[in-house]
Image 1 (tube, rainbow, N blue to C red):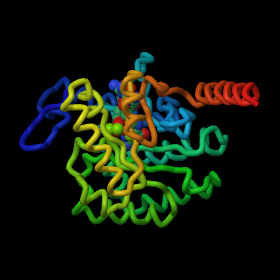
Image 2: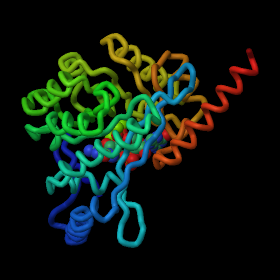
Image 3: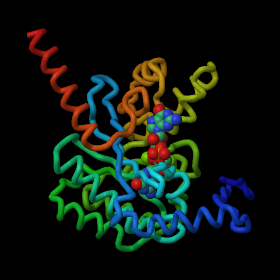
Amino acid sequence: AAKKTGRNCVKLFDRDDPLEVNLDDSVTDLLRGAIAGGHVAMVYQPIRDAVSGEIAGAEALMRLTGPNGESISPAVFIPIAERTGMIVELGRWAIRTACRELIVEDLVAMVSVNVSAVQLSTPSFALSVAAILSETDVAPHRLIIEVTEGLQIEGNPDILRSLRELRTLGVKIWLDDFGTGFAGLSCVREVAFDAVKIDRSFLQATETQRGAEMFRNIVGLVRNVGCQTVVEGIETSAQRQLSAELQVDLLQGYHLGKPMKADALHSLVASETVVSRKSTSASA
Ligand code: C2E
Ligand code: MG
Ligand code: MG
Ligand code: MG
């Protein structure tokens, strides 16, 4: 129940609404024992090279299962985890799990993990990432931290400091949901993001001539500031083709692979490796 309040300000829950307060409390209870109880899990969505179509990496996405086996959307539980501070522990668990399941197992070359403002504002954030990398023996450049554009990075010294520290570690930093928030291009320059993910709302508008033109301009804009371009939310072959024509670097979306557990990703990677070996030997 996201509610629009004043200018540009989205209030996720109405504290005066008893139903929402209840939901809030029950999710908070669920989150409290979620790691120990196995109620949270990570799923991974393939990120593909736009030219070869090969799996270049994956985005890690958190899943929470309710007491009746129902799946609770991140749109619901992430804001609650942020408000209660539990996102700090959950976030560390997410990074560690993603590193272990995908990189230690060498399933893919890189994994991206989403982080919230609350995490980045914690002074020890980069330190905790460094600890996870050394504990798992994962090379820093194989981890990507995704920062959503809604974050208002500029003018937030704690967040900027964490990003600088991550950069010093050698971790990659991507700007997520570009075009929906407040960051804009000056921020893209200041933080020197390695890549920018263009929000899927732009892709959805590409059916009209004007929308397609806008999408083309945004891709060009991101490329011109020297960032890799990633398009998320690709649902059709037409959208994939358009993105490829615009020479976007990396693609992600249901059309190219849905979020899945690590073992399913393992099978997918294995089956595609066999196919590409077969086609190589066939043409040799
Ligand atoms: P996001 O980082 O922008 O992630 C992309 C979302 O789009 C995911 O939703 C993904 O399942 C969905 N998606 C992927 N391909 C398509 C497509 O082709 N069409 C459509 N319609 N959707 C697609 P999800 O998993 O529900 O996550 C929602 C948001 O929750 C994420 O947006 C991210 O901001 C946040 N989130 C998820 N996991 C974590 C986490 O571990 N930590 C933090 N801090 N935030 C997380
Ligand atoms: Mg993301
Ligand atoms: Mg996104
Ligand atoms: Mg998002």
